[in-house]
Every structure is written in structure tokens, then in C-alpha cells.
Length: 205
Ligand code: GAR
Image (cartoon, rainbow, N blue to C red; front, side, top):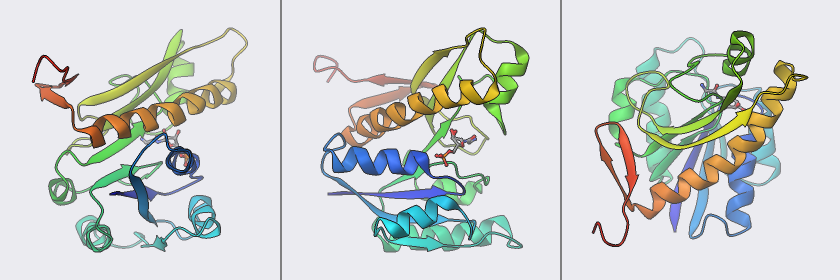
């Protein structure tokens, strides 16, 4: 059984999508060992409690980044977590934290990276006037929204879209993309060459 740890700060719909995928057998042989929020009032942590997951608030407010990260990492390790999934975790991770889980931290971002990193990516894309946007699941490295890409899904921008309708269609794809990416990483049948993550086929060994 592979133990997944979820870090979130808000609504938690990506966490719920991952939980539902596990429950439905779309992510086999895995469980969510712990859900951690850095925000006491995150709706996602209330959902985690209601669904009887191990749910913790480790508040980040007023703490130095690495001090907070050390508390979070200790809890993840205590729960035997081997894969950390950031699901709307709106806090930069320290290099120290990233090094604790090499190629074992995933993030989801609501744009086709490297376009529109940072906050409110869907609004940025809409305002820029792009015709195609989407979402990206990537490994986390020391830079913001930067590590090697695992899965991307494209979403066409319609003429009658606004920021809200576009974000909603991107979110549907996020939920699919995260399950796909988790399966790729847990299966381990990939290699990373430069920035490129390539699936290993049977013939490539
Ligand atoms: C999602 O759209 C996710 O891609 C985004 O926050 C939202 C969280 O929603 N993450 C980022 O922008 C990270 N840079 P959720 O709490 O319902 O999963």
C-alpha cells in the first residue's frame, strides 16, 4: 500500500478527486495517509475531517518558512508518506523541504506551464486572450511552478467564456490530470532526461 500525503490551503476539490479515484480503484494500492492544511479555516480540511481522513492543521502564519516546513515534513514522515501531493497548497516550499522528498512531490497548476505561473493563473490566461489554456501536473523543485512536467491537459477558451467558466472547465481537467499523474509516478515507469519526463516502454527497459 502506497501512502499519499495531501497538502492544501483552500477548497480541496483536487484532494476530493484524488480520494474518489482511490476509492473507485482508479489509483490502485494507495491510500491517503494524512491531509495537512496550513490554513485553519480551509474548507478542504473540514471535508477531510467529515470523510474521516487523518486531517491536521499545521498553521503557517507567523512562522519562518523552513520552521513550518520541518513540522509538515515530520508529520508526513510519521505517517509513512512516500508521495506528497500539493492540492491547492498556496505556500512556497523551502529548498530543505523539497530535498526531503526527491521526485516525490507533485503540484497541480491551472495553466499550461510555463505560461502563467503564480497566482490566479486562469485569470491571467483569460486576460491575456489565449485561445487554449489548461492545467499541468509537475514535479516540485526549488523554483515556483517549475519542475518536470508529468501530465498536461488542454482546454479551449470559448468566445462566451469568462474567468469563472474557464476556470471551471480547467478544474474538471485538473481532477482527471492529477489521477493520471499519480499513477505514472507511483508506477515508476518513467525517466527524466533534462526536463523531459518520458514513459518507459517495455522495449526501452
Ligand atoms: C486549483 O485550481 C489548483 O490548480 C490551484 O489552486 C486550485 C485549488 O483548488 N493551484 C495553484 O494555483 C498552485 N499554483 P482546490 O482547492 O479545489 O483543489
